[in-house]
Amino acid sequence: MKKLAVFTSGGDAPGMNAAIRAVVRTGLHKGLEMVGIMRGYAGMIEGDFVDMNSRSVSNIIQRGGTILHSARSEEFRTVKGRQEAYEQLKKAGIDGVVAIGGDGTFTGANIFMTENPGIPFVGLPGTIDNDLFGTDYTIGYDTAINTAMLAIDNIKDTASAHDRLFFIEVMGRDAGFIALRSGIATGAEAVLVPESKTDINKLIQTLEDSYGKKKRSSIVVVAEGDDAGGAFEIADKVKEQCPHYDIRVTVLGHVQRGGRPTCLERVTASRLGVEAVKALLDGKSGVMIGQIHRDIVYTPFEKAIKHHQSINPVLLELVDILG
Image 1 (cartoon, rainbow, N blue to C red):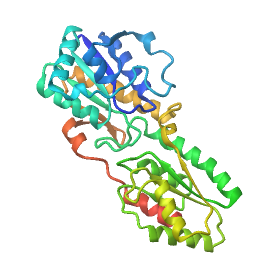
Image 2 (spheres, rainbow, N blue to C red):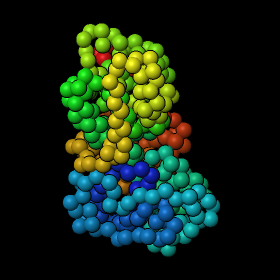
Image 3 (cartoon, helix red, strand yellow):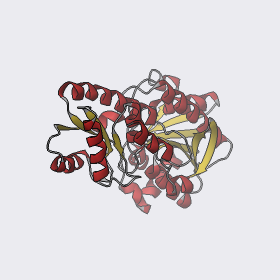
Image 4 (spheres, rainbow, N blue to C red):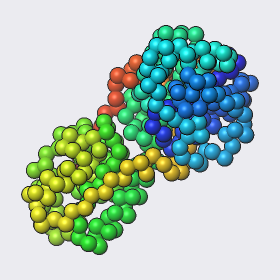
């Protein structure tokens, strides 16, 4: 193996640059040529490759986003598109690829390797949602929950000043990890997540109990994929039954994807990036590199795609007890 490539795909996540840096510098340390693929699978199809050296990844470990950019590629979903990508990789002399992204990224890589077994892929879990099976924490998650926590803290200040009930929507279309952790950390009265069916009447009872105890401001954290709807829809349902509440809604949105990665994020991404190169040199292929209980583990793409990390029921209980 003489030349490796690295790319980022799907939604961007803080820490991706730290992972890119680790992959490139580890490859160089092992005497390999390193290439960056711009704009994910779209750039792979177009042959949008850039040679990378140590200076290419200088001063990026603290930056959010991804210097290689990211894009979704409908063309890569076709056999023709994947064949064009394969030809571009072979033309560039690339012997292995590190894919940083989520389940969509790994699904594409898995199909690609089935059709073109000559080029091995390994993956790094890059998504703020933390929903990938095979790792305790995905790259981007720790920064996202800290960003959400700080924003909710700020909102609590104004909620207290005006005796208001705030519904705060965080990212998490299919997973409630961001909502759950940030909700516990900020002392939310309730946290609504896709993994647990929302009972509006129970929510109202929780809020009324707090109101009866002279607590005039409350926070409810809502994952965008909650079964009862987004924060606006749930707020409307509560307002119908509790017109005495002064309700406000805040949607944090894409602010959760940006910003400087935390210390934990940078260290985790760096370690996983180093292990990705080692895995390729050891002949591994079609696996996601993760970290469970501080140990590096390899999870086959098929398993990482089909299974999702589950919510810890103990944390859901914490919300009920402490909220």
